[in-house]
Structures are given as structure tokens and as C-alpha cells.
Length: 89
Image (cartoon, rainbow, N blue to C red; front, side, top):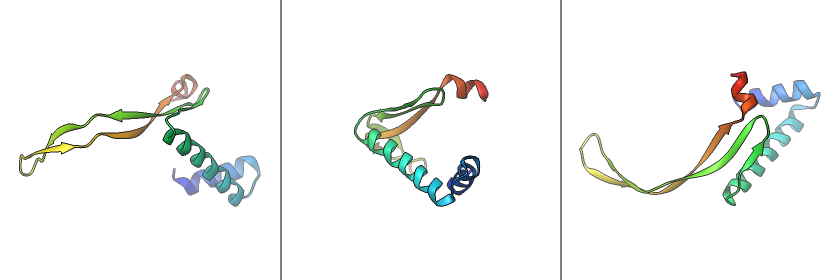
């Protein structure tokens, strides 16, 4: 399912237009992004939690040349499924 499919499904289920569903989805994505950028987390009870995880800098290896390369530290978005979602899968 891609974003367009999700928008169509939300619009169908809620009886709103696709434009309104798109605005709602964009608002949700923006809110989650701002919260994660600020170092917080978003918890949707029964669905799951969005959070930020930090990966330390480390050494890697170029498989083609076998040369050691330095991989920079970075932050990555993480999602952990809630109990209800995990049970439904």
C-alpha cells in the first residue's frame, strides 16, 4: 500500500474527500516528524510507538576494494508495534 492507496482507503472509510484525507495524513506525518526531530516520541496506544534511535559511528569495509571506511553516526526513525497490532499480525 502506498500513500495514494492509504488516502483513498481513509477517504472511503470516513466519508471525506480524498483532498481532506490527504491533508489529514500530511498533518499526521508533519506532527510525527516534528516530535521526532525534537527528541520526543509518539505513542498511539494499541498501534505502536515512533521514536528516534542513535547509531554510533563505526568502521565499515568497502566490499569491492576491501578498504576500511568510516561510517558516520546518525539518528534513525524507529517504530515498535503495540500489543494489539502485534496480536493482529
